[in-house]
Each structure stands twice: as C-alpha cells, then as structure tokens.
Length: 165
Image (cartoon, rainbow, N blue to C red; front, side):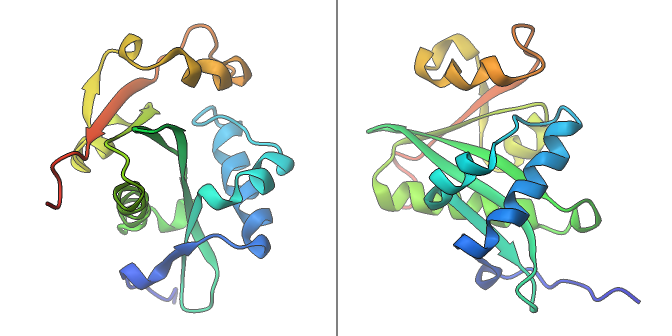
C-alpha cells in the first residue's frame, strides 16, 4: 500500500545541490510531453536559487517550481512539475504559494506565468491577460520551445501590490 503524503508548508523548501538531478528529471519528463520548456542540466544549476522543491518525509523530491526574476516589479512562476503519481494532492499549489510568498518578501508587485493549464493558475489567484502586455524580454526562452512560433500557452498574472497588507 502506497504511503499517503500529507501536505504541509514544511514540505516545501528551497532547492539544494543534491536536488538538481531530480529537478532536471521532472522538467525533462514534462518537456518531452511538450508541456514545458526543457532545461539543460547547466541551466538548473545556474538557476538553482530560483527553485523550491516539495519533499516527503523521506526527503524525496515530489515536485519543483521556480520563481524567476525579470525586473524590479516582475517575476515568473515557471517549471512547475509534480511527479505523475503525486498529482492532485496539493503539491503544485504549495509550490506556487512558496513562489508567491518569496515574491512578496522580495517586494515584487506582479508575478506571471505562461501555461497550457490556465485553470490551475486561476485557482491560485492568477488572471488571464493578453501575452502582448508582457515585456518582450520574457520571450527569449520561447525559441527553445517545440511550439515556437505557434505558441498556444496562456499568459496569466497575479498582482501582489495590495495582498497581505
């Protein structure tokens, strides 16, 4: 019988060097399905400080998510990946919330995401926007996408200016 993972905030922590292979594995699984952009191993190491991981009681990484800073007032929630067998248990929500909390601590006023799963992010308080409203700099990673230039992802944003005050 599989052990049920109890979702707690304490299950989310900043990623460590030992987590890199698992983060890369999770991202590769979803990128091969066409659900997210791939990341080279070097990219994960270079951006490790962006990542949070969700761990179980045995310290096994069940999911990851990153908050990537773009400007003084803008960051992206990216690379959200949860092991298939652990989906629909609140892990993705906990990881996105960790990114939101860090964005608030840093004084970021808006976070955005590009996704083909907009309903999940709408449940997290994000709202759909026209992609053209996002700065052009964010599109630099798109050339690596198999869907480029015919992107079907939805842009969503969450304003943090007045939250938690």
